[in-house]
Length: 489
RNA sequence: CGGGGUGUAGCGCAGCCCGGUUAGCGCGCGUCGUUCGGGACGACGAGGUCGGGAGUUCAAAUCUCCCCACCCCGACCA
Image (tube, rainbow, N blue to C red; front, top):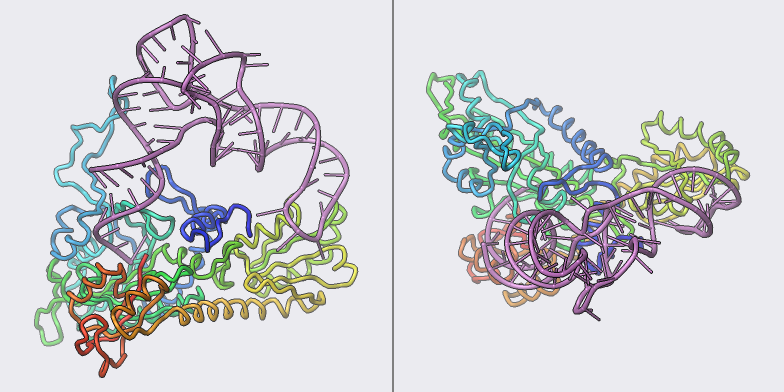
């Protein structure tokens, strides 16, 4: 058991907070609900970000930046959209402060804005106001823009990385000439999200469609990737929306097609946020702390010298430096911990921080021309001849990457249940938790009733799953869709 | 916004009932020395508007009142 980390089995929420803080991923900001992402946490986010940035650039997308401030009136243009976000917008009403003799620093009432400005909760509205200027002809399409930005959603109850008032994300906003093309874009991005989650973050995800109730405000259709956390709850890890013509209609964005006819533009938007960091923590973490997938880990290998004195340090350095240099040339990210802490302290520290591989080098190793590698995922100790390390380390990192994915997948499968009746459904949600895969009649009434009864929601409608012959778990009517139910974050 | 609680060193707390030395303890931090293969030890040391304001009193961390902040539990969300 790690010092200062509440065991998962005792209190999962405390475990999560302990890990985030002790591993120095993040800290609370001075304003309630805000978060400081510390360097170690930011490197993790940066690696995720870089991975995805390469993926979208390879598929023809480009980055741009739109302003943080949005005229209040923009939000109101799209009815569903305003409904979805109005309750959580930060509003700028004044532009300056002044020093008051009695009350100190106060808002200067003279500086009140004629039109209030909102801080973006998402950027559809500003972006489409600009697209109106940029799009005239089908020759201007498609526009495939992404931005990396911060957004603000004033949340009541917040949790580090999972739900904070301000968070970092990417938001892609594309404009297309046809509905088919927009739909293809929506699904292509969903596939990129699946790859990001599974191939880089080692998080198995279920892809599917959101119900009308759960979808993004302003979208025709929302697709998502959903993952199961270590406490068997569901986390929406990314969403890709087909916005249809909702925003082009709201902002009057039309183009002339090849037949010289005016048409409304088709839109998509899609995003993943720093919430992904929360997912990595909760999918892979254990009672010792983080377990990071090598592909996104800030340090893939940590070298811990074991030495009595200055001279001992020198010997370790002399012995292992050529090996480390070779490994670095091979593209491995290595951290050398020469700090004054004891080796035992360092072992625990770096395990808490989730470094996939530890390389121990001490006098006994130097004498016998070898070193010890320890896997974070399994705890296995591997003694290798010095000249084997460079070749073996990348192979071990790959194994760890694969192993973490497989463990998470196995966990999800073990906790995904089939049920025979609604009472069985309720019992399963209450006592076992996890996901339930079952039929749904497609009625919102059913969805709401189940939510009221059990707090479980439809995480997604499975694409391409045949529901013929299946019955709705609640109503007994023929099922329209196969869905995944679960309690969500 | 409704119910419950907490503010004392960087962090976690004791002291408060029953006012009275120089406000303590653990962790952490600094210097020095010994250590170092699973969270080392010793010596010395730094660090406080006791959340803020007013009141009672010879005397307030302690009693009274007001204010402020934060945390936990119930209706939204990536």
